[in-house]
Image (cartoon, rainbow, N blue to C red):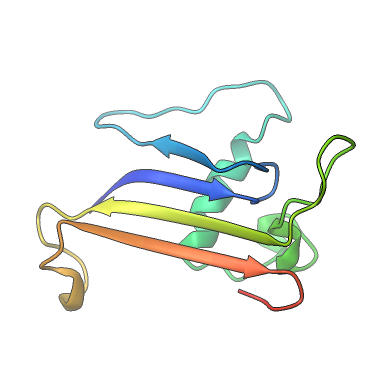
Length: 113
């Protein structure tokens, strides 16, 4: 199984819906300090089931929700989706017939994930 695409909306520093295509070969994320590079990796980990707020650099799991800036209001929902190619029919039995598997995790303020 190989990662194909990562979509974030309202997750940490990503206010707008943002998509990252993960192409064949090496994919790198480059940018200045504070632009959200580590948030991309954390989004992937969170979507795949990370439950430790501390390992997500927060005090509570709701800290992954966009908290607002001077120009943009805070959000009430954070959502991350990962698309995984399954060309070799790997993984758990219930997913072996699928060519692509989509994993989505969503959290709402005061409601949980």
